[in-house]
Structures are given as structure tokens and as C-alpha cells.
Amino acid sequence: MTDFTIIGSGAGGSAAALELLENHYSVEIFEEGKNYNHEKMNMLEGLQTFWRNNGINLFFGEPILNFGEGKAIGGSTIINGGVIADTSEKILKLWDDQINENFFLNDEFFKICNDVKNILVPKNQTNDNNIISGSSEILLKAAKAKKYKTKPTNLAFKETNIQHNGPFGCTSGSKNSLDKNYHNLIKKLGGRIESNSKVIKLKSNGNFIKKLILQNTNTKENKEIKVNNLILSAGPTQTPKIILNNKLSNFVNKLNFHMNLKIICYYDNNIDSYKSSLLTHHVREFENDGVLFMASNYIKPLIASYLNFHNSSQIKNLMTDYQKGTVFNCQIQPDFSTATIKKNHIFNDIKISWKLEKRDFLKIKKYLKILTELVFISGAKKILLPIDNNSEIFTDIDKAFKRIENLNEKDLEINSVHAMSSCSMNKDKNNLVDNFGLLKNFKNVYLMDSSIMPSNTGQHPQLSIMAMVKKLIQKNIENKKFKV
Amino acid sequence: MEKLIINQNIKINLSILELNYDNNLIFCVEKFTDKLEPDTKKLVFLGSIFFLLLYFLFLIFLPKKIQFKILNNLPIISKIFHFYRKIILASFYEDEGMNND
Image 1: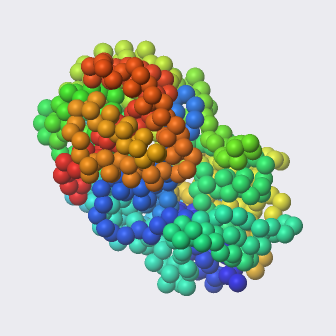
Image 2: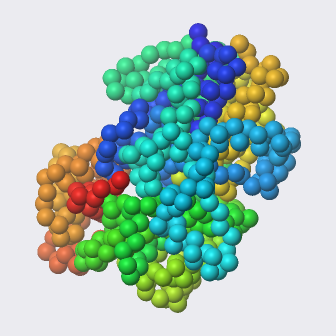
């Protein structure tokens, strides 16, 4: 029997597997999604192949929030990974307070972060001028004019087919750094990764999970696996779903996430941002408030899909001007709004709902205005705001500001790709996991992914997830906690 | 039955978007809808039935622009209307020959 069975091959599962293998444990990973391949495919095919539910994963509420989540070897990193950002010391300190232990804000954790970076990020990247993208450059210039703080991003492009575009659905290999680096190492060290394997049921005996029933998503055949130690790394929404569906707990914690609001901008000249839309810099002036501005994906079918509220002649005109456009993203960490993951026992399904709190709504309005000002400073001639059921095209800042001022909560078009803390480590007596990642009431079930982060990162979370998991595995080994 | 209803929804949306019927495009949107998870598929199917009922009972003889304005503003029905509209637009402009790399 394998020492460790891991569910999920994303950031958490991969970091756990590599650390365990390096410490001479045997490991097998089961992943619900497909194996990544380098075939070129269009956006809709990418959505159907690598995204959970074709990219439609709704948090019900007003407004409805769409949460994009990966379902492939590499988990959500395959559709969304790539930016390797350090979580701020302020947040790390907060996390240490939340778990009542000096785990995050110390040299050991920073060293582990660097180890992860060394595997994923090319060494000379930030000095490589070729990587500066058109869209990021426009935003950078405007930010400099306002004297806002900006910073280059570390991109996880080591060993990958670098593409500025970072295509939607990852069709050209620019976001498979986890597979190219971590998974190759895992396989070299004898680890096994099996795709198309969906968890159907966990079978327990007292405080131990003894068996796992997996379904092959192609053949629909079930198989039973004996389990020694189980690590759940299925991500911030799927790990709690496995817990609730298998009654490992009757509740999970509130889900934290980032809100993305996108502004589409058009300029006088062709800026060809579709050739280089990947974000290479962040505007970090407001990062202490949990807000980042950045360039966003700009590919033709994606932009067309954003124009659904416009009439057919507006769509034709805007798509004719396609090469003059780009998209900027306002990523906001909500201070009060969270989502709830609950099982409905009548319909036997799990729903995620959320509420946009008034104070977060005011925060959105404030930062939408700041980004709007920035894009007009950058020379944008017309912009489209992230407003539901809105076909207005704004050509001057005053009208755009007025519209933002008159916004209603349910008018907003918000999506998210970063979520965390649905089973958070914390010092609360009712916590789901302890500070070793061990699930309450069980002796061989560990949670090792973004679901156990104490709270919101305010940053792209991949680096912090991987470093946290690596350190948790080390801590378990040092304290001889694993039952192997 | 399900396929027929979804097919009709796509065709109505194409006509409101003033786009020509294109079998390949219709096939892409149908395939996308078919690959949704069962719960979402159920919602899309139910929404599609209501959409068709409403369209054939009240909207069919109105000009396209008015149809668009009404469908845009009807709660719930607008969600299914824009669901198809988004996929159709993505599919149409994908086929226009954009090279992502």
C-alpha cells in the first residue's frame, strides 16, 4: 500500500507530493481532470477541457459571481497559475496570530518560498526586457505619471513554452510550469499521477479513512483503493465538497476570495495587446488595502463574450477596433464579504452562495474610479465598465465616474479565480484542521491546499499555498506525526 | 427533445445577433452546453424552455432590436439569453481566424 494518497494535482497536492517523495515516502496522486497536452485548441475547447464545468462555477447571490477553477493535471494552476507573488508580511503576521504559532513570518518560511521560486521561476526573468507586454507597459506609464508604486511580477515560466498571451484555457504551454517542473520531479522520484480519477466515496473505520472509491471519468468504472494516509488537495471549493459529501464534518468555514473587475479600453492606435497581454507588472500602490491593478487576458473570443450586453452593431464596431483594445483588471480583496458552502440535504447537492457587503461595495466603487482615471490617463479613448446589462461606452471620465457613483450592487460583473480558507487553520476551538493540517476527528486525513490558509492572501496565492504545504509536510515529519 | 430546444435557443440568439446560421457554430455551442455538469445543464435546459415559450408567445413578431431590449431586461430569462449570447459570440469570433499565439 502506498504511504500517501493525494487527491488533487494542483499547487497544494504537487508541493505535498514532492516533499514527501524527497523524504522517501511513497506517493500516488489522483486527479479528476485530464492530462495536459500541447495540442493547440480554441478558447471554447480549452474551457471544456481544463476548466471545471466549462468555466461556469457560480456563487449565488446579488450579483452572481463566477468563480473560475481548473480541472486538469496541475489543477487551477493550469488555467490561472503563473504569477508567483509573495504574501505581504502584514498578512503573514496576521496568519501567525490566527493560528497562534510563528509558522509564516520567519526566515524558514521565506527560505521555503525561495525554494519554490527556484523550481518555477527562470532566474533572469525580471531583467528580460523582451517579456514586458504591451498592455502592462501602457498601465505602467500611466501609473508612473500618477507616481503610483509598481512592481514587476515573477512568472512561473521555467521550462515552459513562454507565451506573452497566457491564453485562456492554457493552449500554448505557458501555464504548465507545475507539470514541467514539479510533476516531472515527482515522476522521477517514483511518484504516480493518475488523471481522470474522480473521488466518489471515502470509506472510514473509526478515526481512519481506510478506502477510497474512485471513478474513471472516461469509462465510468469504479475502483477501490486502500488508503494509508489521505491528503485532500482538491482546492478551495472541492476539498470542502469532499468533506461535506462524505460527512467528515457537518460544516466548513467561510470561503475567502478575490474579486476581479475588468475594464475594456480602446485607444487611437493599434496596440496589438493580443500579442502580449500577459501581466508583467502590477500597480501596487493600494496593496495594503488588498487592491492590485494589472493587465488581463485579451484574446478575440474572450473579448467578444464580454460584449453580450451590447447590440449587434455596437459589437461589430467594437470587434472591428479589436487591435486597438486591451483589458485591465482591478483585483480586490473583500474585507467583509465571504461565501458560504452548504450541503442541501433535500436535493443532495452543495451550493455556494455569497453576499456583497456594503463596505466592500463602496471599496469596489472607489477603486473602479481610480482604475478608470488611470486608463484615461493612459490615453484610452473609450472604455467599457464591468456593469451587468450595460451597453454604455464611455468616452469621458466624468460620465464614467457618474455611472460608477450611481451603481447598484447587483449591477456589477464580478468574477474570481482565487479562493481560499474554506477549512482554515485557526486557533478557534471549532476549527476543522489543527496546525499540522490534520482533519479534526481523523487520524490519517490531512488537508494541504488553499482551503486551509488562515485568511485571504490579498495576492496571487500559488507561492504561499506551495510554501505553506511544503512547510507543513516538513513539520509533520519532524514531529513524527505521520502514521507510516 | 433537449437537443431540439437548445438548438432553437441558439438559432433565435443568432438571429437577434444578426449572424448567419452556421452549422459549425451551432455544433460548437451545442457541444459546450452538452459538456456542462448535470446541475448546470438542468438549469440551462429549464431556462431554455421558458425562453422559447416567451419568445414564441410574445416576441416573435417584434423587430430584432425590440426583442433584444426586452430580453435584456427580463429577470431570469435574461440570464439564459446572455448565457447563449456569450458562447455564440466567443464561438463566432474564434472562427473568424484569430491566432492566439
